[in-house]
Image (cartoon, rainbow, N blue to C red; front, side, top):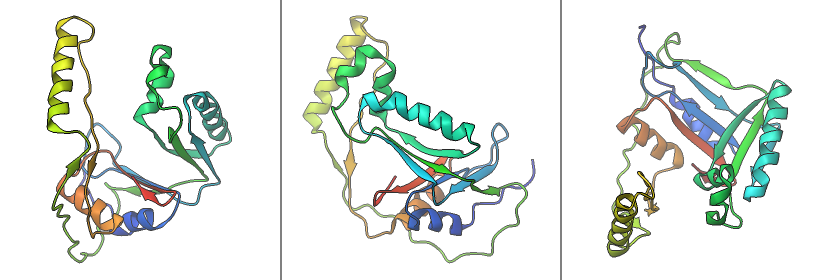
Length: 200
């Protein structure tokens, strides 16, 4: 395998600073997957879903954009997955962000195995998170774990995901925070999405 060249910081900066952008980054070499990163800027249009009933039309719009030869990049939330199983519809929130996609003319592509290495950059700040706040108290977490054990033992399921939100404050910009995360844990598939004043 040829040498792997890291994505130039300019790609990450553009994704962090440009509204309605999507960066799909390969941050670690892999023989099994493509060694390319894609930066999507300035969409032709935006596709959104706010309820489960919006999801089928969203997929039709995505198919239409692809049929037009355009690129589609964005995300579905975890809750959007409820739309694929009728028995789970009642668990979904009534409204909220279910999906966001940009429709793009074409991406900027960085080929990690054939591009020249970028000049050395200044050392980026490292993220330090002084205090993380979870939205689930320890007692409630333990109660839910016990309930999952009970359901598994009763044969209702063999697996469950117990998730919660974590909140913290940082003085880092979205670009610096993303750089710090990718530097600390380079993964084959990383993403930075900037829309509606938020960074994901």
